[in-house]
Image 1: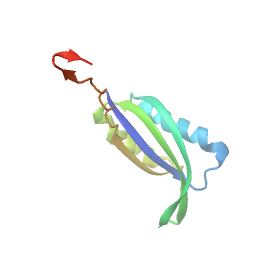
Image 2 (image 1 turned 180 degrees about the horizontal axis):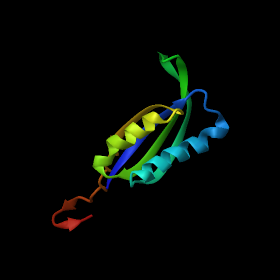
Image 3 (image 1 turned 120 degrees about the vertical axis):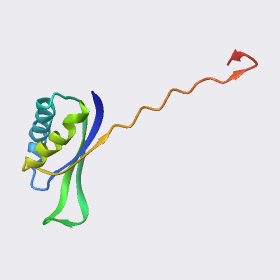
Image 4 (image 1 turned 90 degrees about the vertical axis):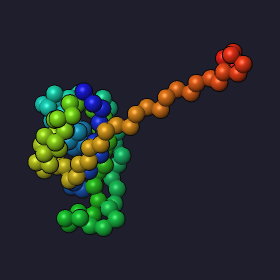
Length: 110
């Protein structure tokens, strides 16, 4: 399974009390595709630079998950059917930077 991150924008009509339920529906879709959610981060409500489809703002969230590569397109299609989801962008999770290695001077590690 590959690691991915999904930036999800929920509609501006989403109430603060509905946030957990909306994220849970996204997690359920990931699990239906055979994936596993590793973390979710709420980024808050933000204004758009310009109105899109009569929406002026949205509730942003970042969800990290693991999923087989051939299932990503199906997941995006399922999330677009969810009425609470305004936009979805799935990208491969950035690789963790390698640990710094100690320099070797004259054959001895410092």
